[in-house]
Image (cartoon, rainbow, N blue to C red; front, top):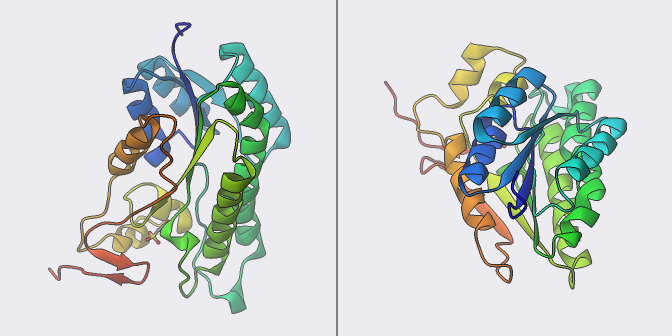
Length: 251
Ligand code: 8X3
C-alpha cells in the first residue's frame, strides 16, 4: 500500500455484502483488509483489489488478536471498520429452538462484533478520523415468528453498536448502523443449511436488493466528511414493507 492510503477492514468479506463493500472501498482508494474464514476466496479478492487478506473467524479470540497484529503490519492505524460477519441459522419457533443455532448466531453477530470492534478501536481512534459501520438488519428492530434467535442477536448487535455512539463522544470515530431487509446473498442459503429451493423461495416474485446496492451506500457513508455521522440507515427493496410484509408477483 502507499503511505497516503486510508485503511479499511471488512469482516465477512468472502461473499455478499462484505465482498461488494471491499470492492467499493478499494475503488474509493482505500487499502482494504479483507477478513473471513474462507482463505481461498479472500486471497483472490485481496489480489484483485490490491488489498490484504486475513483469515480469521470472528468467534475465535486468538484469531481476532492475530487480526489486530496483521493490521499493525499493514498500517499504524485504521480508518474504517465494517462489521459485516454474521448471519442466521434456522427458522424454528422458540418452543423448538436449536441451542446450537442460537449460540452460533450470538457468537457471530454479537460477540464477533464486540471482539473485532474492541480489538481495533484504539487503531480507529489513532487514525484521527475513524468510522465503524455495523451491518445489522431490519431484524434489529423487528421480530417475526421463527426468527427469535436471529432477531434477538441482531437487536443485541444493534444495541452494542448504538451504545458506542455515546461512549465514543469526543473521540474522532463515527458510527453508522446499516439495517438491510432482503438482500440476495448467501444469507438464506446459510439459514436453511444449503437448501437451495427454500432459499430461493425467500426472494421469489420480488426484486430483492443486491450486495452492491448495500455496498454503494456504505461507500457513500465512508466518503462523508469527518463531522457528518449517518447514524442509522434502513434499506429495503421497494417490494418489502417489513420483515413479514412483501409484495410478490404471482407467475
Ligand atoms: C435479513 C433481513 O428481511 O431477509 O437480515 O429477513 S430479511
